[in-house]
Length: 138
Image (cartoon, rainbow, N blue to C red):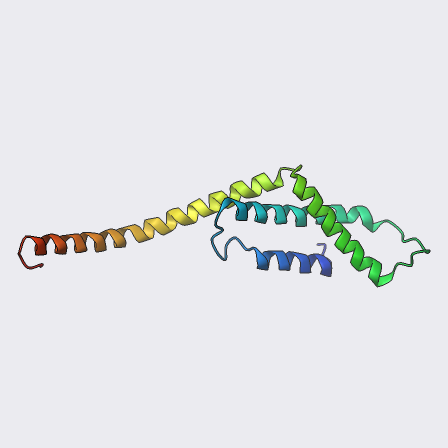
């Protein structure tokens, strides 16, 4: 099994902590589009990383740790640029899944909350009716 590089693991952790769809409901279409675009950017960045692993550094420009760091940043930017163009269709699939997840959460909340709220409303309505007619509520 292949392990993630430290840079990859850090990128994934940062993106999931910042925009975790399960931690809080994503409100609005723009938020969902941002989450989908960010997911696609990380995914594309990781997919193009192997393309640059075999390249040797030019001895004129040095190499070293600084070049490794900036190469990672460059790949992130490539991923963001490709994601901004929405050419792969990943954003669309992620958007559909986010909408489906939100619809399921909303339906689940409504199914558990509806019987209680209706009972409270019915009780308040009955009390209001009873006091309007001059009788005491039971």
